[in-house]
Length: 253
Image 1 (tube, rainbow, N blue to C red):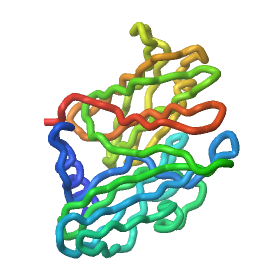
Image 2: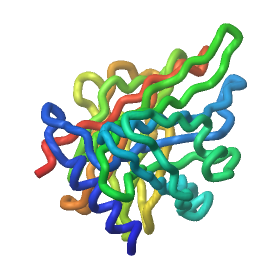
Image 3: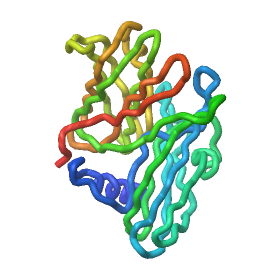
Image 4: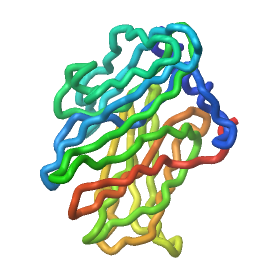
């Protein structure tokens, strides 16, 4: 019950126009990871929590599981309380392993201050290469009903994944349709949730061929009132480097 109340608080405070976003007592990072990828990559997520309140606060985090084949890869986990001093920033490296003790897993992360102090959150999911590290900033845009992801490509050079974080413990269905640059349907499928969690799939699993460039995705939720998050990641097939794009919807009212 406590976790649901915090979830409502975080989602409601996030439901503001993009042009009017402000600091809030928490927020969501739709995907964090500790797991191997293609081309010998290994992805991990660092998270920064900045306390801008001018007073000490304590934060807590909830990690929601990735759902594969209809089943969660782990049970939802809640962290121990973590102190963050006034006007200081806490950096949590490889957060899935260091704070939740999980290996080879990914999920969605919610962070909140227990006493309602305002926070600024940021994250980076990255891998190390021969000449350094590369990766992506993961940001959150809360949406409802329907949302879009642009810049979709699936060919010999790039591939694209679509992810959806559903934060509610109730059943829902998402319809994901991929279009080419001319608005012709290139593939479609459904993401079904029976509980809260994250699902991520490549657009090739939606029937998209390997000649798609300049495409886009429409994601529609069967529950037009609830809030959720979605994104696309376009990955360089050669290096494994990726670009994250948060799904954009109409202004949440």
